Amino acid sequence: MNDASSLFGREYFETSYGDYERQNPPRKLRHYREVVQRFAPTRTPLRLLDVGCAFGAFLAAVDPGWQIYGVDVSEYAIGQARQYLPRAHLELVRDGPLPFAEQFDAITAWDVLEHVPKLEMLMHQIADHLTEEGAFLFAVPVYDGPLGPLTHALDRDSTHIHRRSRVFWLELASRHFHVLDWWGIFRLLVPNGYYIHWPTRALRRVAPAIAVAARRKRP
Image 1 (cartoon, rainbow, N blue to C red):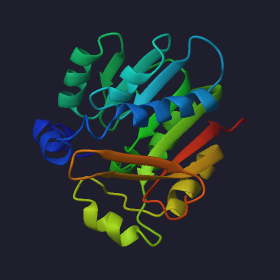
Image 2 (cartoon, rainbow, N blue to C red; image 1 turned 90 degrees about the vertical axis):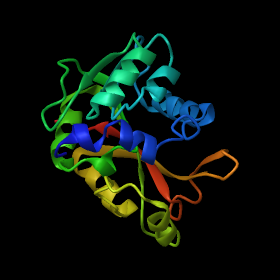
Image 3 (cartoon, rainbow, N blue to C red; image 1 turned 90 degrees about the horizontal axis):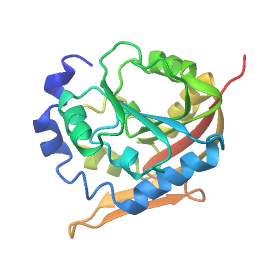
């Protein structure tokens, strides 16, 4: 992203995600952790990279025996995450390659890909950084289906440069990985501060967000 420091500084998070903690309740983070446990290799310790880790809420919620890594384009977010989670390996990244030589058993990108200009390049990098049985897991908002107009209306984040359909994201993932599963997520911060986060496979074609689990393609 151009001038990511100014785009994703303190003002961005306070304006767009002032309810960051409420939008990341324990049950939501627990769901993501369980998804990683389901699709990643069973070896111990598990090495996990969170792309777009922000303040480190998800990394803080995973098994304490895992080796945890995170990257983000925001210098402000990485600074906050380092204070919050000193045991994690955290690095600032711009448009260049992922700044780790390690390969990972799981790479996650929760509500990140819609911000990324060079999606194909990032997909290649993620695939290259996965172990042979490693899993890539991501969640994105989707703007198609009967709830698409509502998703558009509620989305006030101007850094969402990919306001795409679920078909777009599934086809993108399929070009680089074997898609193992995908499901819908209903989510909303309601006026009383309660955050709805309801994963569903039955309504995945109408949910306003989806999550995808994929595995690295073998040569």
